[in-house]
Image (cartoon, rainbow, N blue to C red; front, side, top):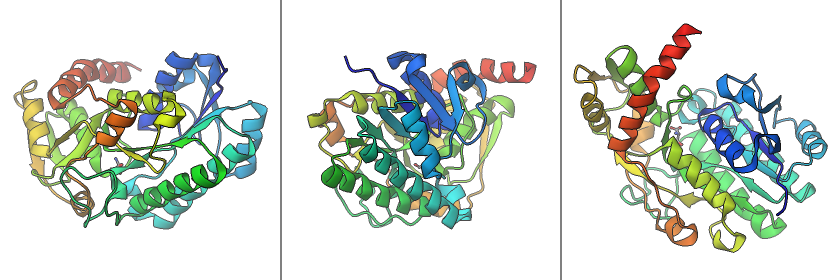
Length: 321
Ligand code: SER
């Protein structure tokens, strides 16, 4: 079997923290190098970790060469809400780092590259229910525009340079092992933290705002599954729709109340409401299911149960430290 040496860029983020552990389990800690622009928090310091800035092309290329990297997971990005506050920075970071990684894949003949897209690549005139794999895409946030453009770059590098790049359009990702990272869907992460610490939550979206969501365990599984799939099965080289569940703030609150009866929610929508309103409510992921066997395991009830079972101990540990 070919030996893999894996580089994760942006490992300190919400997805990166958990994906790094998935990659440790699959390939062994010694074959995975997690990197970010900031020092590692928590669990990441238990494996190989280095500071790396993917905006610096020479630094990136030297790193790949020195460590004989064969695969890259490029996760670094500015998310939707943060990106609107500093659009040019978000655009430069999201695009330049991707192009550097794709160029590195050509230069060093990398085995494969992973790069995430998002439901943010869709926009107000995209069909909102069961959004098809191939459809109108008119993103309105800088984050979404960078994901849409990034998808086209990935497809271009696959067609013209033979780069084996694979990508998923994540819905809102919900995990409890790291704090929310500036996204519009992140209310669904924050709400669990506040349910435990304050027994109440003020939501920045309206109560009936439906968005596609996914538990982090499923997101990690989907990512590893598409990266492990035989090359010929990965037929979409822009990015695959994937789905698990759709819910609105009122529904997640009701689910939390089954475990914490005194929990209350109030609503105070802000600029993130119009971002949420421009995105799909549910996603058709039949292409991913058919091509490489995607299937989610978690729905709202099972996810809530899992988080509310594990998060209190994690928060108690933090207080002790
Ligand atoms: N979770 C992201 C955001 O809300 C969407 O991919 O920005």
